[in-house]
Length: 338
Image 1 (cartoon, rainbow, N blue to C red):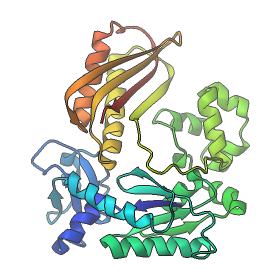
Image 2 (image 1 turned 60 degrees about the horizontal axis):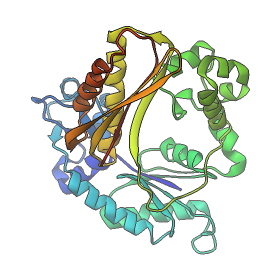
Image 3 (image 1 turned 30 degrees about the vertical axis):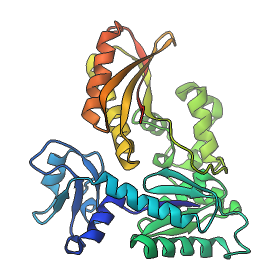
């Protein structure tokens, strides 16, 4: 079972301030400040506002009665701790995946609680009773299917996918649902005429391997068949957050490289903020056209989850690496050292 709290930070703020309920709400910087949206309420999302969007852009889309609040990370973490403790009363195997989501091993609970639908409803009621928030729940035979199921009917959803329903559940999904594809990979798949999961499943594996590389192609094919781990590891701690992309052609253009690093920094920052993490070590990963892979690291003076800091430090590492002008096949950015 995968549990995902709905618009977690924003929902806490609306819970704590009833006068803000029903209004577009952004957790992040004020409209007059530089910064990005950490998260936003579903009322704000109706205007096209999304996490990691610049505040200046979000404020242009939102009406005048929108609410802007600074993140209260310690408070959100305390609420998250309450939720995880409550979930442990359902299953002894609870793995916290981030500040607002968790995996539970619910195998064998049918005798104690009932069928999967009943287990899911009980989890939702428990969270509502404990902290007054809604959650979306997905239940499936492995982590991949459970997570996709929790996203299927957000917000406040419940979706159960039984083993014999996996392929019918996956096939109509767009390729955007695949894990691990970056902004370069999706257009490549679409150029090949692959729009849905079923297209991936029916495609020639050799063709995918030729266009995407062996590792990525096999990972995507495995997802299209609904394969995933069914292991839940209680109290596991993420060691790092990273984002990387492999270019279709080797890149030497510094503008393209800077844009890619900015995208990677935004993705890493968004994940860090969602999970309530701040890091002190920036890692730059570069794979050259000759497939030689290099990494460079920099220690920050203080922990942060700021996209701009990640980007500037990673670009500085690139400039100091004497790699300028050399063809780059892969570029990535990582954060660690919580």
